[in-house]
Image 1 (spheres, rainbow, N blue to C red):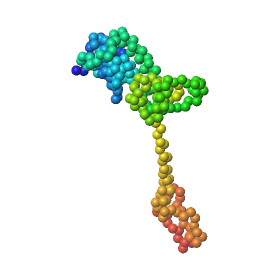
Image 2 (cartoon, rainbow, N blue to C red):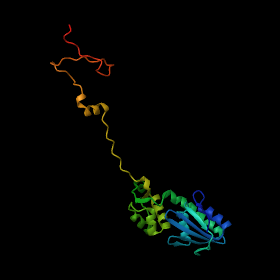
Image 3 (cartoon, rainbow, N blue to C red):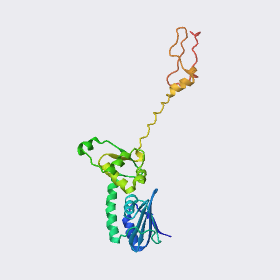
Image 4 (cartoon, rainbow, N blue to C red):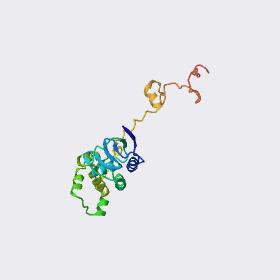
Length: 243
């Protein structure tokens, strides 16, 4: 059954493994972050197994430390399911400390596995570095960056650890960048249609109420109300028969 569970955020994998090795030295630690998951097997305080996707042993431990360091964990008090490596408690500390430092470097270049890497031409970096030497496998990855596949998708094809390290190198050399989904360009909304002025709208709705701008010579002049009056009801038409 589950003995302990929680989040690695703010705690770290090393602290959890140290604690488990001291209070429950035998069991299986499951780690999950989104669609990624891995397992660590402990036996009498020693780390005896690690599994991540198709990786086992030390490569799986490295992938777990680099990719699942901020995920969630569950510890099950069950016998180990795998024996693919053996690290004593002191060796666990040393190895996880090294991986934690590397994880910080990789996170600075690759903030999320859901990011989309693409090729860039950094003229400033090119002028500063001149020629850039890449291993053949890293060059293959560079040629596969199409601006559509995410880091996680590329990692499924090539292996997580190898993909992260090579992508970080390409980013540091100015040959690639990682775009997060939230930074994708959004089409600008069209400007709002201006509403007609109240006076113009009223005139358009009731053209019969509009007053003529001038009077013809044959039309008798009408008395206009003072500016303070609001209706015509208080005024009478002048009597032309009165002298």
